[in-house]
Length: 336
Picture (cartoon, rainbow, N blue to C red):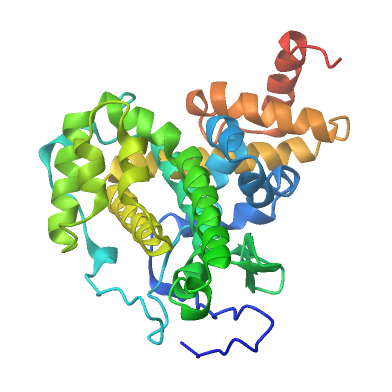
């Protein structure tokens, strides 16, 4: 990292490369990537809303879960970074535990909703780590320190800046920002944590298998999985005390969840089918001139929750969507 002197006025912003792997993804990208340009996704503007309203998006954003904007796995850090991760081939790991085969594609196990949630969590955490992607392809950090924007990975490097760390006031302000990031991370994973609590034994078995295969046997995910009910976030506050620690937790969580997706072909198939049907409904709905923008978004939420799993892709026509909309309008609450 470039050394600075006390004479410099501005905080140095280290550059981070978000190198995407062209050879690997969730194997869902081809099925859903074109949906990002439909009226459905344009209106929902999922990527913007997710970082502004994290909790509401995780709990109720049907369009975001269906479209799942960013499906590729993040690449490694720049070799010049002070915090270098070992290459454990985490992008190739599949979980073989019998419980995952038993619950793959089942209503109470890993299903289309689970895959959608994982995709959305992956998107939001990537935005934390690398910044929000701009129209020109560049990423801009979400977090402000001393008047400048930083991503989590940039803050990891900044954490090693001796000029900042030797100044008590600047150091205190710097770690106040860490608390902000940790609270954001908690809000992101809260819904997933609720699910994991209900299947604690299965979750622990899968995390152990992933940690062994990824050579991450010291991962905080293991401690988290073994924590007493309701004590997960307390344990996190006690043990994740640096930006580097939080960044490693983000990496481990994303890699583990991506391994879950690779290990559940039935759930992936259900997710792809749902995404395709949501895309077609949105396209056909856009052909109906009488539908307002607000009604479009409300109906799409309703359709994903109540309709897409009970209709085939071939049965979706302009007439059938019109009938669905008419039935919805009869029962939908009137706008105030």
